[in-house]
Length: 216
Image 1 (cartoon, rainbow, N blue to C red):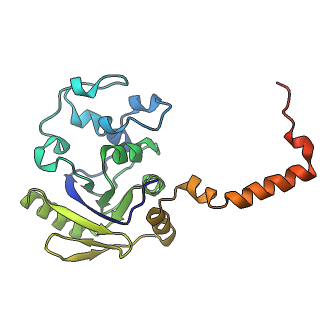
Image 2 (cartoon, helix red, strand yellow):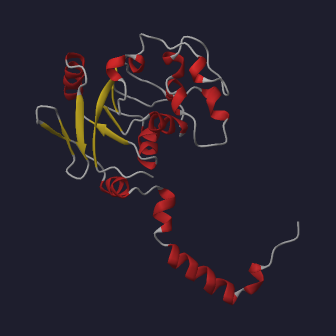
């Protein structure tokens, strides 16, 4: 998993409440057995004017010019500003996969759905919860200044605005540690690979029959 330490990026505003995971990545794209290829289908039904399905080349589709991510001023955005209860609906982990594969590194909203919130941390995304008043102000500033960018310093737990003002945010200490070190659940386990190998060696020395393959 990619580490998150300090990130600076353009902010894209998603000015909708209760954005659910089926809007983030529609159900027809969940058939893939791979953990890649979801970025082009992020917000698919809002992003394109024609229906999408697995295997359809995104380059052949008709972008919706009114959708925020298709507007030139938000090209290359890597911070998504959203409204309350972002990521509600089904618990599909494909939603943070799609956001991360599109290029987002952080999300800012007044609130997130619990399972989605936890899945973000497990996939290298930083979801930041701020008050509705602070989020409202950020929406106003994004609208007023094309190319509006923020710097997010996870170690210091602050968001730095273009003019230098700092906005503090809270983050769970364990989740912070994992993001700073680029550790997902597998990475956390592999920190103990030497102990695991030693345990397996000792176990097989005591019970060598476990090493034999079972007949099919």
